[in-house]
Image (cartoon, rainbow, N blue to C red):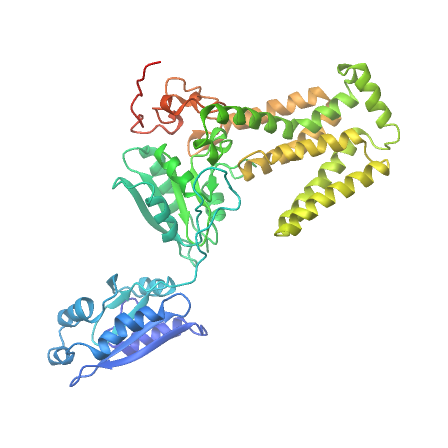
Length: 502
């Protein structure tokens, strides 16, 4: 096994061809330059990953048609050859030397072009990445009325540049890692040096370095490997397609991870408070944002407890309802053959199936399937006497409320617990719901995200650090002069106090 580049160009080239055996996308170009003493060169790249036009215009053309290469053959010194190729012969911007065969092969598979020169025990790596990528567009999953419209793409450097545009500070650091034995996926770790807590940063680096897996094909794989409790249904890592959300999180003292080939960036730590905040909350006025957040909390409670409370009241505690409403519900349920828990379970499962069908079918057809499917099935079920009218209203309301949750992963976790609450309500009524709330609350309290309580800032009540000024309600921006305390940032103050006359 060849470990380093050989001075004999044919030995190195044959080894490369053997490693890339049956890989038809490996292409190469042989050249012989120098008028009196021919020097053998071989350009090697992966078709589709490297920009062939750049190599032809700025490297091959220069070596073939420009310069007096005869001097290289007179005295075959390594220094003289390298100096000519790196300083005169090749005009590409990023050039480096590499002796290690494995690192050289990794450069080829990353889109770079390798130049082998006969007589040199090192290769020349030319940055020629030129694969096709999706253009910058508005994020589909996080559309906003007011705010930036650009979103991440599948290109790592494009994504880091989008964040760098927003934080023009030399203390904003981007560290690169290669994760995956076979995929060797590039991962960018981003943080602001004088804000982020060192313990948090060291913990993130440690978990990345401890990963031992064949490949990382998407940021979700990395998310699952670095989270604290993989058995929990709650997400302990926040993901976003918005560069402005990443920049805002970094300024709060959090850490971001961008994975090559994925348009979703990861942000840690993630807490219940951050997952319930929308990107648009940063741009709207504080009164509007506070009202929306209160409504959002009501929507969360309704989505998880709505069906369960209906079942428990109908089945076990009907005396809690006014007599008129109770008579109306009883009249609607005369012809329903199933108990309320079975009725709710059937409708909730049906809504989940319709939701999944609408998600898998893209474009306007998906929306049509969801709307038409819900209307037709709901109306047919009522006319057939399988469910009552009020049950349709309750299930539709809880489903709509789940869409008000900004984080899709959090909404999915709450839907799982919704079915658990339905079962508990069907067995024990309101007592079952209280047991479920206690168990859910206990789980949220003990759950951590990189050493930070998942229930922050509600559990910590960081009044002194200003956490509660930007949670369920949002204080005016002039009052938010402190960074969130749950991240324990080095620099706690993010703005000066604004002093104005009343």
